[in-house]
Image (cartoon, rainbow, N blue to C red; front, side):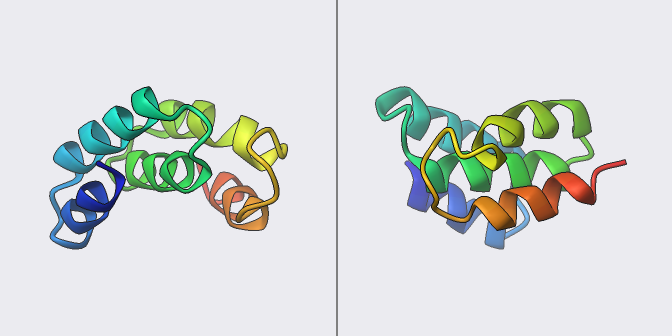
Amino acid sequence: WAHRGHVHTLRGRYEEAVADFTRALEADPGYAWAHAKRGGTLRLLGRYEEARQALQPFAAGAHGDFRVTDARSLLDRLP
């Protein structure tokens, strides 16, 4: 699901991407890459509060060290 979500993101199909990242996380709640991509895609949709909620635990290191700095950078760019 996560890779399909990434393809949707690349094609500008953000709602579909969020749905696929969500499905990936339902299957594997610890999938850090899917957390990061979901949060980033929510940001692209202008759904800033949801993006913040998705990225904050990830930026705090709750999902390991994978791209923690990327999550923090995305959080810093939210309005």
